[in-house]
Length: 90
Image (cartoon, rainbow, N blue to C red; front, side):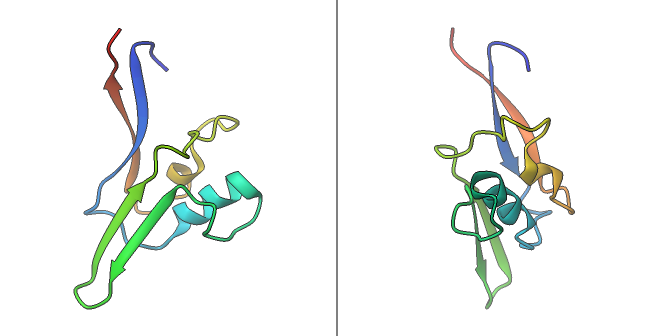
């Protein structure tokens, strides 16, 4: 990854289906268990409107440092998650 940039996981809310695969992958990375509790990703669904809101908790995300790519991105079937880069002040 390029120096001078911070990489973050971003969400295309229009593509997210709320399947929770990213949550399971993230939780597995942190605990080696497929529960949702240890995930750095939160998915909120409004069953009345069908609205889905996905939030990445940057304070606990370590970008799966031991993996080639973050697991949440790897297992996001609809392609809603992607890496975003942001220039950091020097």
